[in-house]
Length: 235
Image (cartoon, one colour):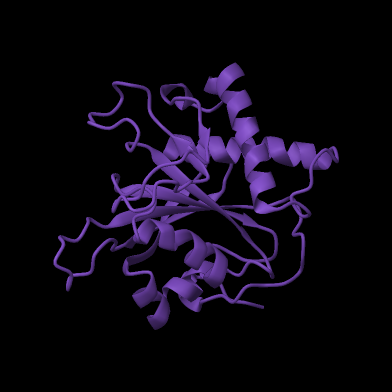
C-alpha cells in the first residue's frame, strides 16, 4: 500500500509539472481525463524508471478500468479506476486477478461534494463489494480542486450519525503518516457485504486508505464543510 501511495504521489508531481508548462489542466478536465493522464505517467515510470519509486518494480504494469465481477457475480463489468497487482510469487494467493490494490478516484470541488461524489459514488462501491471484495484494503484517491482538508472534510460525512450508518463505519479516520512527497494519508474501516440480519455470512471489514492530492493552487475558493473532530475547522 505504501509503494502504491508513493507511486501515485510521484506521478502527481509529474502531472503538476505538465500543468506548470501548460500542457495539462487539472482544473478544467473531467475525472476520467485526469485519471487517464495519471495512468499514462504511472506507466511511463514503471516502464522506464520503476525505482524512481522504491518497490514499484515488484508490481505488474498498472491497469486502468479493468473489468471485474463483483462478489455476488451479478455484475461482470465493474471497473476500478486503477489496479496494481504484485508480480507472481509476491503474495500467497489462489487468484492473481483479485489479489490487487484497487484505487477509486474522485474529484472534490463545489460540483463534486464529498458526500454525493467521494462517498456515495466512491466508498459505497467497496462497501457493497463491487470492488476489492477479495482483499482487506484499498485506496480512495481524491483530486481536491477546492479548499477541503483531510481529515476534517471527510470526517464531516463519515463522523455524522447518518454517515456512520450509510457507510457502515467500524473505525473512524486515523492517520497513517505521509507519502514520500508529504501528502497526508488517513484510513477508515468499514463493514461490507450482507448485513448481520442476512442469511449469508457477512464479509470481513475493509480498510480504506484516503489519499487526497491537490494542484499547486486551488482551482476554486469554495470550501467543503469541515468537522472539528477531524482536527480542522472551517474559517
